Image (cartoon, rainbow, N blue to C red; front, top):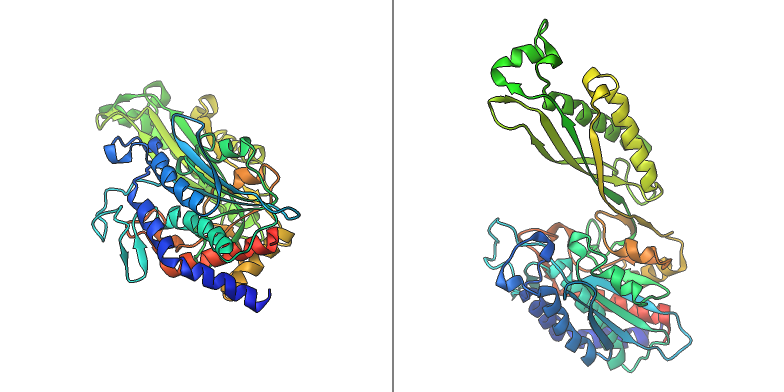
Length: 428
């Protein structure tokens, strides 16, 4: 890129730094906790809509035509569109406005929604995940237009509800179904992890699953009959926890196998795991337990299909249960609750190379291609056959934590990267 053009863009972004900082601070103060968490507080009511009503004015002032609409239960999404001059590819930016609850642990700064700006940082829930990135996209376009640079292709910015609780039908899925699509997409989740501004070109798929085992209850005073040699055994009672541990061990052994067999070029060996998350069992101390249930999150590689994973897990459990007479006759009930699909884009794709060029122009030490440590709405964008990457400001270590904060300098750098990506991909 011509140095004078680059300087023009950088100077324009820098001139908007204070305004960008104020917008992020203001939106952090709006307590847009996802309703799915079930916390009924007046401050949380219609939080997603309140953020997007605020950002609607910001987008319109930046030169975008806006569409504020709710697909479900009055939870409004916001889409801003800047129509290109023609002859260029279109670019989509996507980010969610809902946040997780602040939690019960005391925040270092006291108020989890302070939006306080101090020593170059903006503090509060949502600053990293991901109101900082959302604002940076708007100011990237605003900076280009302020500098007199008109994109040839359309620029579309989506601010959606519902992502934190997987409600794509509320947010990104609904926005995409309404026709807001493009030739390439950047999801602006935070990606400053081991290196600054990594570019995620893939994410794991995640299954949520639970299994339950039935035993046979009896008074705890008769446990000897259940567990001792010479006892009456299953005629009297069956310890469901003991039987459930066979299922637990089956999945632990499968996880160990995956550590060697499940591989993907964007992830280090051992990434794909079977995470035992919750456990419920028994009625009380006076009983031999007659029930046990565990829930799991299962992280699988992008190249595997959901059906493959279901088959592997169920075969593993069945094989282990066949070694036990009770479980052979009373197999566990496995319930597959939810699947968050993976996404996987070749790092050699023209779009990935374009985004990497933009990142490295601003931060030569950044722009490494990696797999995402979590999941996000990029998966649903990719299902629309749109090449997509994840790239955004914010240290991932602060995500969902009680010291969440984003560096103002990273917001400025991100806005420069997004502006350069618009120039390189859409043309000007």
